Structures are given as structure tokens and as C-alpha cells.
View 1 (cartoon, rainbow, N blue to C red):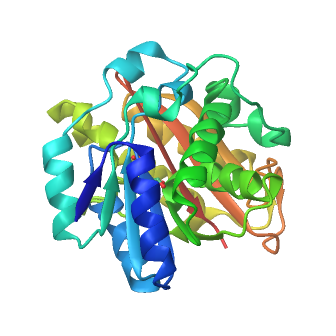
View 2 (cartoon, rainbow, N blue to C red):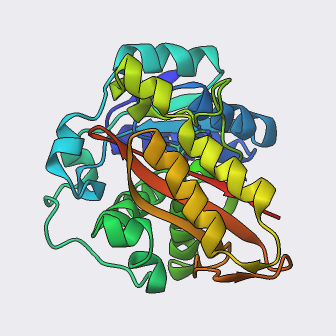
Amino acid sequence: MILFKKSEDLRKCLADKKNKGGKTGFVPTMGALHEGHISLIEACRSQTDLCICSIFVNPAQFNDRKDFEKYPISLEMDIEMLAKAGTDLVFVPSIHEIYPKGDTGLETYNLGSLETTLEGRYRPGHFQGVCQVMNRLLDIVRPEYLFMGQKDFQQCLVVKRLIRLLHLAIEFQTVPTMRDKDGLALSSRNRRLTTEQRRFAPAIFQALTYIRDTLIPGDTGPVIETARQILDAAHFKTDYISISNAVDLEPVHVFDGKVKTLALIAAFQGEVRLIDNMLLN
Ligand code: AMP
């Protein structure tokens, strides 16, 4: 595995490799890696000939300064995990490398209602920040395949939209969510949970499972209400529980069982904000 800090060096190496042919795949991350990230690397390796991973904690996508400052960092361990997983190239840029002109006055993108619903509503500016970093990273790496996790379902929709807006020829692959044995979705933020909070955290998975197993065609309100009680009982402070259509995340008030639908949850366990989702049909 070769590690790059400068985009120019990575670009040169990639130009060389691409001349020799083969498909390139890219897995962007913010580090503090876990098995969920590694499943993306594995998906990438199985479908491409060159697997590139980036580690960059993107300040532009944090609407909450404290969240940014407390974001876990474990670079040495990350690099070890990536090497073991068979990653070919890893890019660990500085903030200056990604935002050479600073992070103000950056381009903004028309994300439609994705920007104002669910994560967009509770984290204003977050998805513009995601697009800013993705635009820059995709311009440097120019992959043919891009691998991202279903755990961040709305982010997947936003990045697919960005790819369309920029007319890029990239095949987007959504990788299923990896979970702990008790159902908690793996997340870098789980490291910030206390032992007690970690014990309560699987309630998100339980609430999602409850929705999936109970929902029948008709009014979605009562199922959401019980899911809320499951989260309340586990001391979660809930931002949202939504049953939404999988195309634009518009809320589904009356479920018909036909349109592709998912349940999405964002909730705080103490200071730690967790998100998860589950397809319902
Ligand atoms: P992050 O480092 O949190 O920005 O995540 C980097 C990528 O890993 C994103 O595409 C996430 O959706 C994906 N990811 C995060 N957690 C999981 C998980 N538990 N299972 C699968 N993919 C994940």
C-alpha cells in the first residue's frame, strides 16, 4: 500500500496506473475506521483492479464545531487496517491540500429537497460540505467506481445527485450497513459512547426493526409513535424518526407497500448523535 499526502503525487501515480488499464475504485472516509469501512474496501477490491481510500475529516461538513473537535482520530491503526484489507493507495491530505483557497466562498450545489429534509434539516450546511469535499476528491482521484455505505443513505442520494450535476461517468455502489452483534450500526462515533450509553444504543436498531416488522399498508403514524417510545425508554433524544420513500426521502404518511420505502432515525445518546436506517420493502 502506498500512502500519499499531496494530491499532485497521487495524481501522477494514478495517471501511471490508469495508463496500464484496469478499473479504479474509490472509498472516501473520515478515518477512525471499523469493519464497516473495511466492507467498503472489500466491495471495492472485488469489483475493481485498483482500490483507493481517502482519510480526511472534512471541517466543511460539520455544522457543530464541538462534533468536529471531538471526532475520533486513529490514523496509525487506520493505515494498518487498510493495508491488511489490501487497499492499494491511501490518500491522507491536509486541510490546505483539499481547500487551498480556504473553506469560505466554496461552490454550492442545487440539492433540491435533500438539503432541507431529515439530516439536511437538522444539520444545516452539512450536505454542501459533503459535496464540496467530494467534488474535490473525485477531481483528484477520478475513479470509475465509488463505494459508499447505506448507513448514510441520504448522503448516498446527495452524492449520486452530485455525480449527475457534474456529469461524471462514475458508477455508484451502495454497500449494506455492517452491524455489531446486538444490531448497533458500526460507526466511528460509537467510540465516544460510555459503557452505559453503549448498552442503550441498540434501541435504534430495535426501533427500526419494530417499524419493519409491524408496518402494514395504511397510516404510518402509530408505528412511528411506538418507535419513539422505544427510543425514549433507552434515554435517546430523538431528532427524527421518518418513514420515507427511497427516491427523495419525502415522508410516507400512508404506506402502500409498493413504493420502495425506508425508515430513518437520528437520535442523541448523551452528546453522541447516531443515525441509522432500514429498508422496509
Ligand atoms: P465516514 O468515515 O463516517 O465518513 O464513512 C465513510 C464511509 O463508510 C461512508 O460511505 C459511510 O456510509 C460508510 N460506513 C460508515 N459506517 C458503515 C457501516 N456500519 N457499514 C457500512 N458502511 C459504513
